[in-house]
Length: 420
Image (tube, rainbow, N blue to C red; front, top):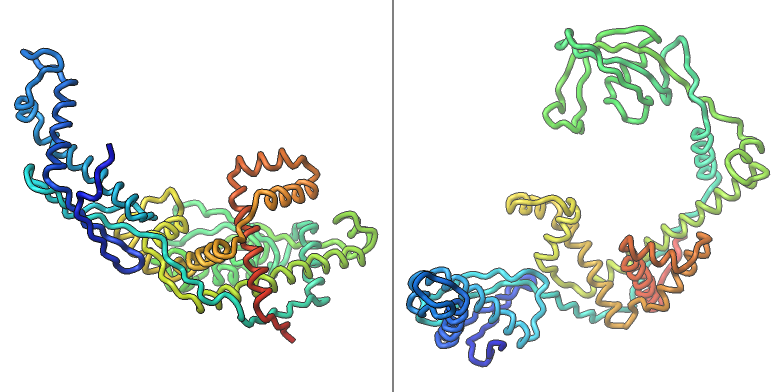
């Protein structure tokens, strides 16, 4: 039978960042009745020498199992009272309840406190009348040429060069040995110059060597070197240049266009690249508009994020499998708290906007989107739905549809100016 909440003494304290603390007093007669019931139950289950099954006297039970009974009783009564108060007060915690200040001596009332976070109340008093600017992200010939250059490089051939010194962009094969460890074998490396795969001093040294040559150099590790203790330190190295390769790229002609894809001419390839770049630019401009609208929506409707939500998001940023100590979590809050808080706010305000204006994705909208995706992929909608569901991506699809509807509603009630 559920505990009668009307017989409990309950007070609720509102703390910072949606923290709530319940102070609960369970009268002694309720606790005692629960204890007597526990003793009767144990008496009917336990077997002790000299007593018939199910007939162990309560005094014997008390003597032998009193402390354990008390602990089990306190845990059970605290949990039951907490659950019933939450239900009675219609409180919906978003974090585990933290029990503290438990007091019970076996005869008086049982008192305790439970602290937890509740979902933030987001007022959304202003949801329209915002003014934003859509950036002009036009695509020029230079951008198309840059993509063509990258495509040519991807289809290029690395040709060994027998002599000469390496140049920027070439691939080199080297062996490097610390002079302090002259007894050790040099370590081999292969990388492309100019791609920041080696520190600047080493790349500069390699560019002075002829193929097959070696020399000693003093190099200094830069201030942004990944290994902190090496930053700013110098080292003596012997570098052997074993080989260099230069990239030969194909001619930009119709034959190359046909090699890249289903294009009859270079101009057809350029047209496709421009279309793709313009699509990306449009998506980027749309993202900028959405970002501005969301920032103005947050500024017009400020609220605080519960600490438990911040901690949960920070843990997800660091990796779900990573166990954090209290000290590590505190340090992560210092480093990531502002970014995490802003991201969580953006998520919550979109969610609340969708709830307030009934814009959540419907089953029909999800089905329609999956049918569109299936048609583009040339697959069966039912099979695609099953794959998405198995991968846990249906919820993500619902969120994408909901967000699109939210931003469409915001844009309809805002002024959007095109940048010149």
